[in-house]
Image (tube, rainbow over all chains, first blue to last red; front, side):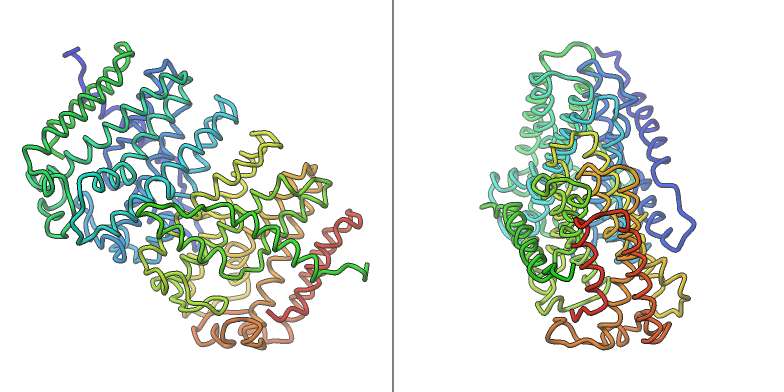
Amino acid sequence: MGEFDLKNYLSLRKQLVEDQLEKIFPVPAGLQKKVIEAARYSLFAGGKRLRPILCLAAAEVVGGEIGPVLPAACALEMIHTYSLVHDDLPAMDNDDFRRGVPTNHRVFGEAIAVLAGDALLTEAFEYFALAGHVGAEKILEVMRIAVKAAGYRGMIGGQVIDLECENRRVDLATLEYMHVHKTGALLSASLEIGAVLGGGNEAQIKALKTYGHHFGLAFQITDDLLDVEGDIEVMGKTPGSDAAKNKMTYPALLGVAQSKDAAREHVERSLDALAGFDINAEPLRAIARYLLVRKG
Amino acid sequence: MGEFDLKNYLSLRKQLVEDQLEKIFPVPAGLQKKVIEAARYSLFAGGKRLRPILCLAAAEVVGGEIGPVLPAACALEMIHTYSLVHDDLPAMDNDDFRRGVPTNHRVFGEAIAVLAGDALLTEAFEYFALAGHVGAEKILEVMRIAVKAAGYRGMIGGQVIDLECENRRVDLATLEYMHVHKTGALLSASLEIGAVLGGGNEAQIKALKTYGHHFGLAFQITDDLLDVEGDIEVMGKTPGSDAAKNKMTYPALLGVAQSKDAAREHVERSLDALAGFDINAEPLRAIARYLLVRKG
């Protein structure tokens, strides 16, 4: 197991996803081309492609091919990117930089940033519809999973909770509830969608959702920890920015040591969820373990 | 034909659509409920429900039942509403009132207005997925029509063109190109989707798309004319607001008399497109003719 080369795996998968994303928005010649330029700007602003990579990995774990899953995997990245563009807006988190480059509205203006986000979200549904090999019924199932995870019952709901809790002292349950919605829902849906499109059975889909739930929480806790302990060079953003913005975080609530324990606990539980899978789950195991040593 | 009671028809259909919309977003108890309240605020702020009404009418013209088409018809209204919420934002058209009531961001703040729009767009795709009676393949076709009409190839593209042309003198071709994208695409898609879900054949779907194209242009021209000649009581907004904002309009470009001719011409062409249909097309004919005498 120690043989698995995670760095190489992630780099190859990232390339695969980016090659596909590259094909999605041909820049049109008309007056409306600016919105596509803006959408592409954020789509290629250096993401880790975590959601598509998890989606593809889940498909493989249950014995599926990755080729036909790739469009849906890219749709998940489009939804993730749209949420970042809208979250960065002045009316929301008002961020000037993300991943070391100016945010969308800093480059294209607020109006175009709103529309570029809208376009990424809208077109994502076209991409879900491309997984024709599994049959239309399953695609509709995938879309319903995506809507639930991205909409008010998931990511959007989480963002609203975040806004509502700003500058307010919240308890651990509320913080977790927020993250389960804001980041956890789409991460978990990425695994569920991969499992569905890969042809997984009910028990397998459920196990991968559980992995996604704990992975999502471990991801968020380690993200918060990076903001306390991280390196600006690796992260592309300034450590301490959460505290400066009065954001509620795990370290602020639990302290650093207890946050690290919590992250370890969720990684363990995510690995437990994979117990029924064979060596094909090694990438998912390695990605989860990596959260505990990540630097960016 | 003179017997057809358009006013009664529109009123009954509006009620049908609103009863269905009422069921869509149950207000949740959690911290995220604000976004649903905001989405519902704009969803029930007094629209004419034109897109769902056209969608249902198209389904009937080709011999379909309206019950199973209702969720998709509502999804079109959700997409239309999201576009109004985002278009009204300070960074876009910066409108304080719509249909006589304060715009979404004036009531809920900009952040929630962005998210309420996002939620309406996202959940619309769940509603398209509910037209199960036609089979999943057709639903995917409908979703592709909706994405094309709502995204950068349609409505979002039109909004970008509008932004790009602000305070700039444009020619008639550019103005028409903008409106065909900004309002025409979704109107036309409403008819196309109704025709597909109603079981129409290719020629019928094409005829209804053509009707939608000309209807959309006539709708926009008469909308522009109302802004010059309209009555604030009926319209719920101040006449002359386009001119005050330096918006390019048909009357500004062609004059009032020639704009009226153009509207009449497009209504005629929309009626021509219905030539192959029987008395079932009477509602669509009456709605098109009504554009020439509308007061709001």
